[in-house]
Image 1 (spheres, rainbow, N blue to C red):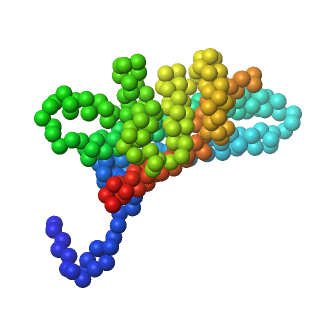
Image 2 (cartoon, rainbow, N blue to C red):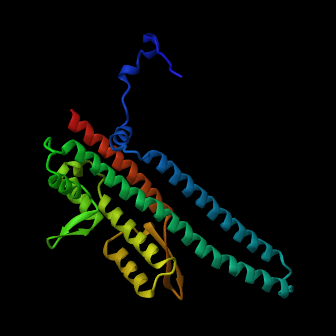
Image 3 (cartoon, rainbow, N blue to C red):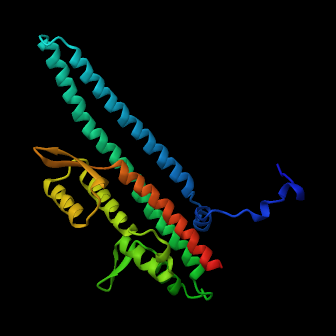
Amino acid sequence: MTIEWEADELRGFEKFRLSRKDHALFFIENERDFEAQLYAIKAALSRNKEAEKKAVENIEHMRSQIDLLDPEDHRNADHLNDHLTDMFHESVYSDAAHSMSAVGMLAPFIESLFVAIFEAIRKVEKPTDEVDPRQNAFRDLYWNPQLVIKKGEFGNDLIRGIQELARFSGLELFLPDGYEKTLTALFAYRNNMFHNGFEWPANKVEKFQNRVKNKHWPENWFHHSSKNDVPWIYYMSEDFIQHCLKLIDEVLDGVGEYLEKREA
């Protein structure tokens, strides 16, 4: 169905401006709907948060039931305390699963977002002469932030690749302060979870713990469960999850501002 608008109905819309975020999303669109992906991620995170809340309520309910028991009812008390212990143990792994879900959605989204951003910038930066396929092939490699030159050869280093291309293209001035610290922490955690599962080898746990301290990552970015006062399982905190979501919005706003300056 085609809708035809009269001039009076369109009055005022000539001054309508896209937000910087919308401008950025339109700029990088290439058969991928990043906004819809982001809505899906936020919905999944919300469901996980509700599940965690319900688990806490169930544990508190079990505690209240134990408190109601007759002090002499040792049999039922022992049974319910055993069940409460099982609930705590299960919640540790459930929280780890939700944390893996969070990093498993956020890290690939952010990686694909930066790849798309530089793909789009490449298209407006490319030379007019495209007759040489070798030059085009090398430009494709150049604009891929997942690749860097290490000792004369291509290697993988997404964060360094983003920094190099952002600096060359002029985007660096419009990216949020400290974005590289956030990405370093996010991908370090992603790599540990995806390579080691919920329970990492002791040396991996110690290495991550030291990295948190040495990199001066905020203490509220990661939480952990302990065994015998030793870190056991690490989780992304809700604060860090929200920080990553905020970073995505700030990156898109920055790209929108970058485009405004280019087009001015």
